Length: 200
Image (tube, rainbow, N blue to C red):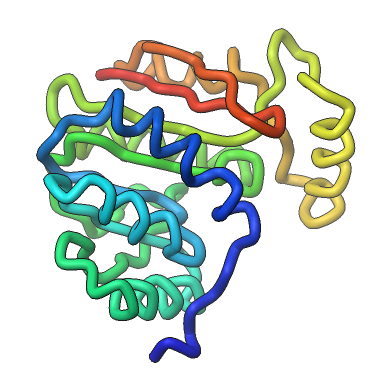
């Protein structure tokens, strides 16, 4: 099964800085739902570093879910569950709450806006009181890109799909607020990215 493992080059670069934030904001024990887990590398890395958390990965793409399952088997991760087929834009995720946190790493810019709307609607359904939504990725601030590289990145994204794009943090916050979540903190990260934490 190991040959199903996929590798995302950005994971090796960003996992330690993300983990530093997660260790600070996540509870020591509880249930975490990861949306758009991709290769699965983050799931097994974070779960290994935080053994008190039960990690539920997910991805809408079958190839990604095969990779996640292969990483779980390779890492022998006791606190990572088999991946679910969740499309954030859909109203039924097939996941049983409550969860203590929902994570979406590098999802919002590489999915249609409908997925962001669905992400917070799903969080409102499934998160426990006081639960967190943790986002990581590139964002605009006050309508402007935070770096020339992010502007070029957005052009590349729109070449993949015109519905993709680097979102403005204020727009994301409006969606969060409409679903009962308040912005707790924004953390500047390496490579012009941000960790953004919302609390119910």
